[in-house]
Length: 213
Ligand code: SAH
Image (cartoon, rainbow, N blue to C red; front, side, top):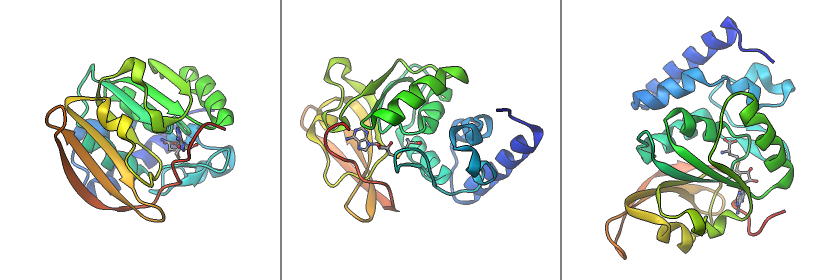
């Protein structure tokens, strides 16, 4: 699979669309401009890879819409060297964005098929997460905590407590909360028991499911 001039041109157009929709973070836009999103999708969908849309991947899951990826990434305010946790590795596209931003990425996926596929694929195209984990993201990753930021890329019916407690002070949790429609929610940890909460609009995700499969 290749990355051609045509793909690069389509990516630039996608970046323009994201700017028009309000994405301002230059590092996030540069990451999206760089990452060959079409390689993260099954071949039948390659023509659609640079539309601002979610698409099916393996195991009935979806690769998130680029706008959603950009919106969540912007909220995380990633700086080079930040230790970050992602819940829902999926295709690995969001993981790649975080790696482009210079983060040390730990990412958890509960679907074994996707976990295996993405674990092989990411290093093949040069993206090396610190750790990809097959497990249940509701629990977070206690042994590597605390994290500078945590992103959840599936719709959470409630906010799992371990994710809040695994944030460092000043750390940020970006999580879509809700059953059918989710409210993008940002928690900033202000102290051991103090969290600031911001609600930032409606999104739609596949559900965050309990336990691994
Ligand atoms: N970030 C992904 C989005 C994939 S969709 C991408 O860019 O492609 C959400 C993913 O979350 C799915 O792969 C799904 O299997 C996974 N998921 C759902 N519940 C989970 C849980 N409890 N722990 C870890 N992953 C979970």
